[in-house]
Length: 263
Ligand SMILES: [Zn+2]
Image (cartoon, rainbow, N blue to C red):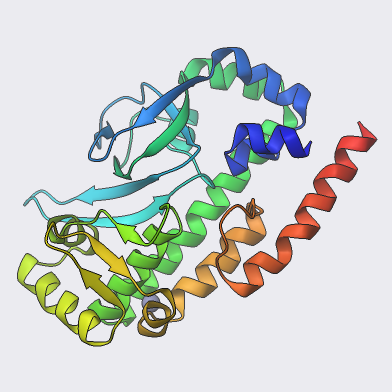
């Protein structure tokens, strides 16, 4: 099961027993997630479901006047299109790749057929919905109660969790899109985070972070959200994050290998 988990790379799919994963496997195609690629536009039919193996996808809500705000970001702990594909088949949100990576892609009809034959796959969908709901609730509270600076630090930490290294490919324009604030506000916030030693910006606008200083600048939402999501979708331990998060990883591995032996 360990090898199986590593090979799959998506934390939702890694939780599946091998037999259930094999219901999907013939229909999964590995694709590259290019930065800026729009996986689906709000209101459009879901053509593909994506299970990221790496990188990050932002769920963006667009207002009629063109304003945008991110409601969630997902990496290898999540998926795009799964929930919409169960019901209306039209996407309620725009999904944009914000950190390059790769994903396993499947057609919604193929996914639904496998879902009808697999209770563990139903559990995967349920866990994904719960993790996403936890993030929506947290982001809604954070947007209403916390400063733009703290919210920026939270999005930067969430992006860092899904990025290799400490350099984030986030321009001020992208941050403006995520935060739902003007570019001038982003410029001001970036300056404040620089003065706090939480980030450095190079000439190309790439943001390099100082993780401990950035965590100090963020509100408590980041940590509480990570804990909630990690409880629902166990972490894979490939990237050290919070102390509490890392500590749960060996238990998860043990649980996985015990389950593998019992099969
Ligand atoms: Zn907050």
